[in-house]
Image (cartoon, rainbow, N blue to C red; front, side, top):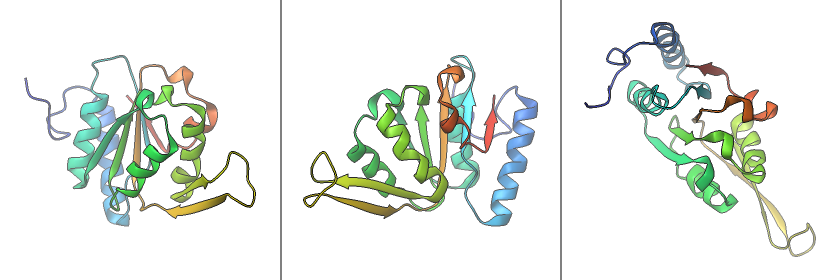
Length: 162
């Protein structure tokens, strides 16, 4: 069976679908991306499918990655700087992000700013901190283990569901 392509085709989760329709309409009226979303549920309930549906409903691109494979700040920088305004970044298994990546995501989620340290291991004459402006986007995190998310990460999501 093919995956559903719209909220109308998404089976079940009536309350979630109704809420998502409201969030989408509000974002469109504000001419802004959706708020960051966290989807948690057992495997197979449609977290990834829903992220793809939201990209179609909003008319934006989706970039997909996974917590366990996102291990270097340079990889994160490459993904973030390739985003277009309004795009969706979907991180599956977000509870498995390493600490450095998670902490680097905080200012990106809040202020759409990415800080990267260049040079040596400690700040000094041979190092610098770069500040990159990231276009406003929606981060969608998916997890089967919501209890493993840190409080600071969980608190940065405006929409939590499934």
